[in-house]
Amino acid sequence: MADQPSNKTFLSDLFGRIEAEADWNLLFEALSDDIVWTVTGTSPVTGTFKGKRACVENLILPVQQTMAEPFRCQIEQIIVEGDFAVVLWKGTSTTKTGIPYRQEYCWILELKDQKIV
Image (cartoon, rainbow, N blue to C red; front, side):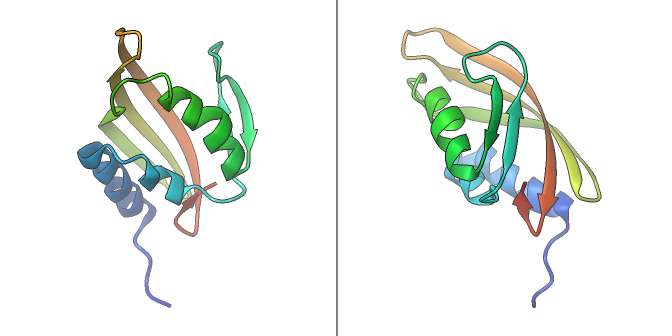
């Protein structure tokens, strides 16, 4: 088996490509089939989503469908300790109603075998 890149390298490459290409399919591919994704707060997508399909259908697509243009990200920092990581990033777009969308994110991730779990 070929050596896998470190988790830091994996995430830096992944988010660097998402930032450069605005291609969120790269994120979808990096999600494990049994991912558990929790969104805190009081937004329409707040909740815990279990499984890749549930995350895509109930979280990612509903957010993307409100945007008039591709959702862009700007990576601020990636911190990795073993199988855990924190990704700080800013997201920008414009909604279909013309409202600028500007948001700051702090994602706490667990990784296993180069997948986000």
